[in-house]
Length: 309
Image (cartoon, rainbow, N blue to C red; front, side):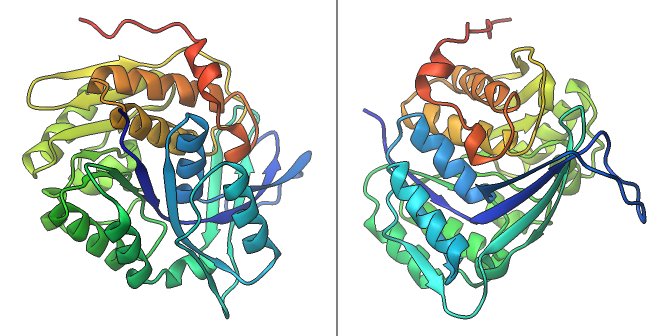
């Protein structure tokens, strides 16, 4: 039987412009489409997990504005528990400005707004409500002291902790030993280890460092290549399905939400990563963040890439 997932993180509204290429510093590029969609790493991961049929509670803080109200309505529509979503009376909801080029690559600037005022007391109340070996999934678009406090409380409560260390931020190595899984991308892995990650070989080098710092399961995402897994028993690349990407926004969030779901269902880590790669491969073929998250039936229809040696 699957255990529930508690996502603690950010909620933003994404404003996306697509253009042939991304601008250089000081340059203006004429775009050719505009989208405004719900986003935020925490919200994206919560929606991804909910669409993949997990029982999800989301903990975040929105502004007292139309973006915040629309976000809560959307979470409820996705069957996400919103009991621990609070509203800030002063700060606006978070906003992300996203540029996407013709190859689907993106750059993102985030104004966190109400996300910066997430209250640790609300986080603790949510964690106190959780029973059993639930999975707690976090990112770094909320204040780092909230992340650290939530990790410590989750660990002492016996919960399973999964950290997506995004956006890249230095972490106190002390908290790494509390984690069950860490999922940096190449840039975030370099920030945490000093290793310039460009391929599976350098990913393995960085993963070993994180493992030696106390994280039992290290998963470094490598975009279209897949994800590199390192544990005490296995160290290998898990390939991703080949697709034509049109927008990579939130593909990492999709991966993390899907990985949490698979682990909550008791799947072996290699099978769980393959499942997450399939989900993320669907998301990059669609525009937007939460709007790109696939449903369980869609992921199940993609053939499994063998994960054996």
